[in-house]
Image (cartoon, rainbow, N blue to C red):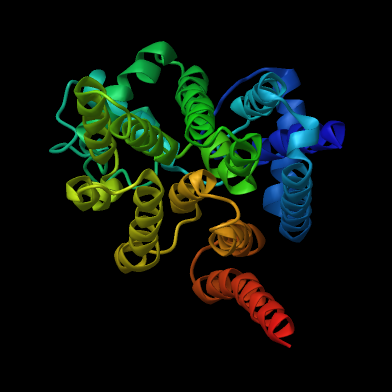
Amino acid sequence: MIAVYIFICVLFTFFTYGYIDTNLHLSQSTFFLRLQQPLEALVFQMRPLATLIFFMALSSLFVLYEWFLKNSEKLFNLKKLFLFISGIALIFLFSFPAFSYDIFNYITTAKVTFFHKENPYLVMPVEIANEPYLAFTRAANKVALYGPVWILLTAIPHYLGAGDIWQTIIAFKFLNFFTYLLLSYLIYQMTKSVRSVLFFALNPLVLIEILISSHNDSTMMAFLLLGMLLWFSKGLGKKLIGLSAIFASMLIKGATIVVAPLLFMKNISKEKFLFYTYLLLAFVFFIAAPLREELYPWYAVWLVTIAACLDRKKYSLLIGFTMVLSFALELRHIPYMYMGYYEGVGPLARTLLTMIPIAIYGGYIGYKKVIKKS
């Protein structure tokens, strides 16, 4: 089963290269083009087939995910666990960020800041004359959308990229590779449970949105979880460092500001802190975020991270809901894959694909409760 899982991850990585923007030229190598061109034809000219492949791969990853969770204690000790998830992360490190353009926004904003020496909160990328990255960057008509800590962190992959776009993409993806492993380690420190780590690390939504599409939510959550771990440690020094880490998380992406009131609650346990954090982030995810734009799948990384730290038996319904939500949200990629545009029936299709699995799960839980009562 482990071999099958790795094989699917490798195939998925190859599949992502079909989604390279036509204005983005990663390599002129004949060998690379011979591999990439058939994949490009698949995803742009045979959309129903490409959509089916994505759905089958996604479903397979979720089935195997459930199998790994059930057999986690038999399969892995701590060393084997981190070797395995490091290997999976390494495979996806070399995937193309196929399902979102956000990484190109990060790259271009970093270039505005550190190459053009402009203030990214005042100067939009589109205002930079003759900037070649504009050809494959979306939302270039906006100033920086993220906090100053994130902007500072992007200096690392920007300079490591050394002006080469493919090298820069890999450098940005390596930042997520690191935060993915850091989050896995922090979850283990929180729970001392191999299963809890696997709940986060092998969740297909996490694999797709963090390791493939490279959203910065893992960085925000890594600082938050580190801060929480230190906040509940003994010693004033650790608590102050923890508070600083939580504050840094807020200055990466503002969603975690909702946990600020919890810091003022006296004698709150770590368990309650985690549970309230889940509820507060869920409020931002389900209420605030859609009011601004829509329900983005990668925002659920917040919930998966916190759910992984919760007690499995006490919060079984919440953890089960998080798993179903992860699957439902990844289905939101399907309408665009199939049609090639977001408008028209796209919003309705995305809503239905999200709600149906959640409704089925709700019905299943309700049925189980009725059976127990009878």
